[in-house]
Image (cartoon, rainbow, N blue to C red; front, side, top):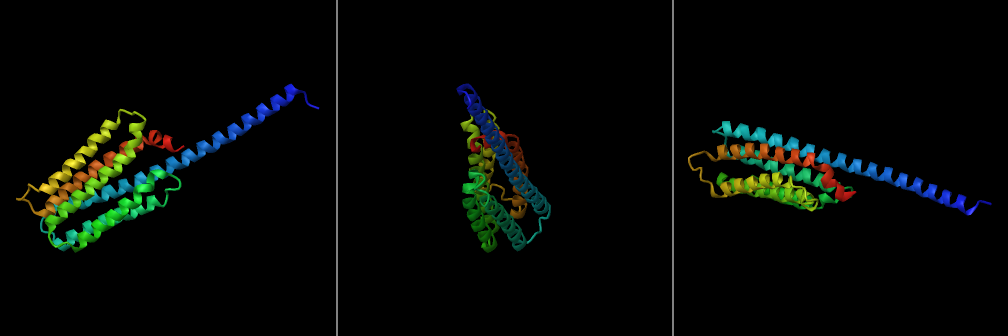
Length: 214
């Protein structure tokens, strides 16, 4: 028979062992979440770079036909929607992606509208709406930095303010002397650069954001 002191030591040892197993599993789960989060950010970074390249193309190609411009931007919005549907499929691992289905649906509507619209000026408004969609997405991602009282959130808020400013400019369209295709190209370049900067910031802050999902 074990003495009460020996039994107490065995119970304590078992508790420590179970705690160690749980901690390892928790650490492994967090690592999986971080890998998934970083993978998603990488995909959207590649997408933003493609958006930037398309912007360079149209800013230089001032004789591009309206149909070509509509098709290219429609495809860009559609690809964005597909990426959002992909992230939504990962929501069981990371509930941060619960809203991705909404972003994807809105992006698909913007894509269809881009294919159908005949006036390129209206496409400026579509791009403006797309930029505002980015603001919503990045705000929800950065919301956890606000909860953590991370003062670097001001960087992300500043970037989102630039997105809003760009959207307003697109809605107003004061560049009447420029071809609409060029305007779209210039703002596509700005979007690509700014979104890559946002995604890079979120990547650096991934541990803070994901700490709420441990």
